[in-house]
Image 1 (cartoon, rainbow, N blue to C red):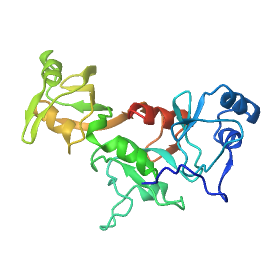
Image 2 (cartoon, rainbow, N blue to C red):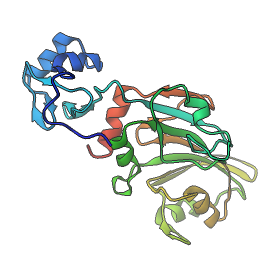
Image 3 (cartoon, helix red, strand yellow):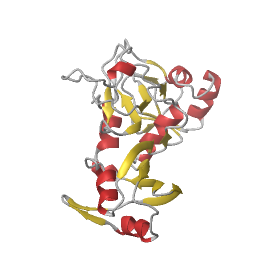
Length: 251
């Protein structure tokens, strides 16, 4: 995890308005105005015109929202296909995440995981601080899933059961929200939101209420949504999405 630095090194320090402009906050003139109006903080202190910062280490906020100024940081959203293992260096030679994002010349890691039979949104980055915030249980980051389940039609009490909590072999688990999306015969599509991160948690919860999962897609992690990404495709997160992830994690 990279560390914050209170005093920038001379060889990497740049004027704050230049760093903000390079990060997409606005024109250099607009960024000077933000600094003048005391809307910018650096490492917890209100910035002043003329300040210099190291963009690789400084924690910069505009109106309380994180600005990612370090151009070496990479933030990706990948639509993991079914059958792909959540690894960037699989020892067994199976199809892995690196087969889709291996072109980057920095060391990346995935934020959490999806089992091989599941698909959908995986965040991939080299930002250790953000990874820790998104994966640590105390931050309670919500994940949204679309599940196809069998043994339908679903009785109305299924949602109430999941919201109240079910008992699993490793302790109780409950959904933050549950919604029936559609049904056809004995198959149904449901949306379930959890902040849990235990292994196979959605599959085990649905099994417990009598409706095993036949397909599972993660559609969102916090404020970042899968959208229309094709399976195996990835995109760079916007600066607003990265800031929103930090904000969701209580930054």
